Length: 115
Image 1 (cartoon, rainbow, N blue to C red):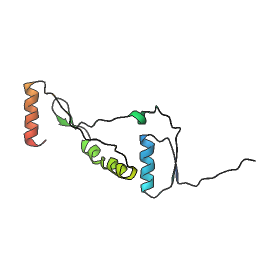
Image 2: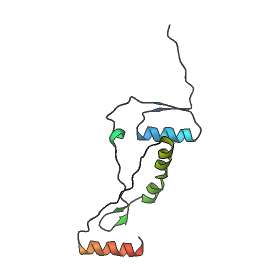
Image 3: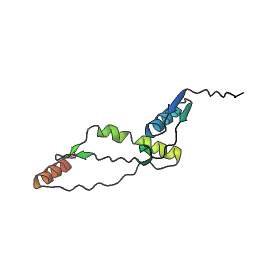
Image 4: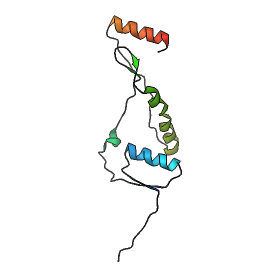
């Protein structure tokens, strides 16, 4: 006869990629119990995913759409680093080549104005 094992939990999260991990950690932070199941797929995109945050876009050097919202959410990665003992966000400089005198002038005006 097979024995049945029952687990009582508030939430079941299927998949422990970036989204599943983020959800589980947020639920735990809110005092919920969580069971995460994952098939351990070694070639999943979250195993090799990398992101790039470039706040300045286009020829007009405009602040990208929703940048401040994204930038403020980076605290989440700092919390994960402290709690999980890993490093999940690395600040790096970005080098941008200006292709014309006009582009350079636009950039310098934005820089002077603090835009």
